[in-house]
Length: 425
Image (cartoon, rainbow, N blue to C red; front, top):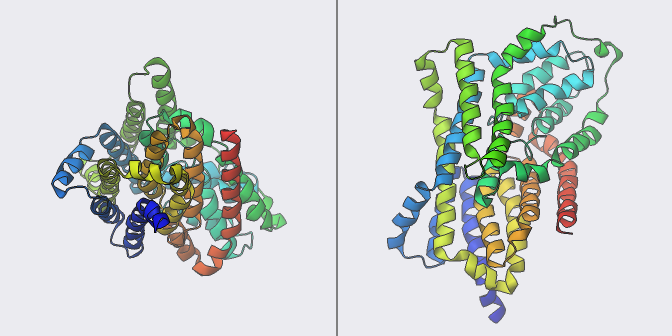
């Protein structure tokens, strides 16, 4: 009985997480599921209901909540602007002239689209993979893996991904510092993709000929200008703020770069205010912002309920710490198929435990471990929207394609654990 009693804090938080996962699985909505988990956490840990409105208000007024909501909103607006105006498609066509290798053509477009986070973005690159593989006689299951895997090679170390931005915000560290430790994920993703996917593809001799599209560097750079402004601007401004204005929040640099990129795209395409308004008030943008708000409310409920304190007492906090850094991120990623979900639902717990256990010097290793574990769950998730849309586009059975993901995702997890051990050492 004493053993069970000592484990009760972990059992309670696992019950709250389970309710969240069930809600996500039943498709009641990611934001609603996270809010349900927050309410259950408050009930399980005896947070007086009279304090709930104050916790919600505190979360809504939090600077990090406002910053992240603005950043995610601008990213969604930029993605929507480029897609709605057809500029993304024109850019793909212009870049084709520079791709001589057939294997490079197969992975280039998914990887390029991956530089700009878009929910379900793999469906945007799928027709391009279909087009460049027209004369290559590829199996559709190979096309699914090529499009899906290489669409996500940047996700653990690219500064525009909301999950990565949220991780840095929750840990209150500069984004470039976190990326300095997560960047090995990019070559590992390319390596795993080559070994388990691209290496298996058989290319006919006729497919090796260069494309017939005429090269026009000026037009290509012009079409890619919004992406260049967003990507390079965000990186340069964020690093510059960290070096020259350490007292200023790094999020201002990201906001400035994204705003400039949207302005550039609007001017290039001569968009009207009504066209921009449709993107701004789209249903999907509202849903994503709701998720961000729900995440910070959940974090506030955990802090107000004393969850971290109780878990830290349990077995020295080690069991809960490992669960919050490996098991929970993987499970939430698996069930939700979204990076923001596992970061927002589990990292507040992990960071709180590290603080309570006086292990804040180990924040980076545990953040990296949680990122790899959660991302492996996201990649192998059978309800990942990119995976589902890609299978649908190529008319491939989901079960058949999903089985091919298990092995590379396993090795991705093994690398994450090994890298964690190296960082701690």
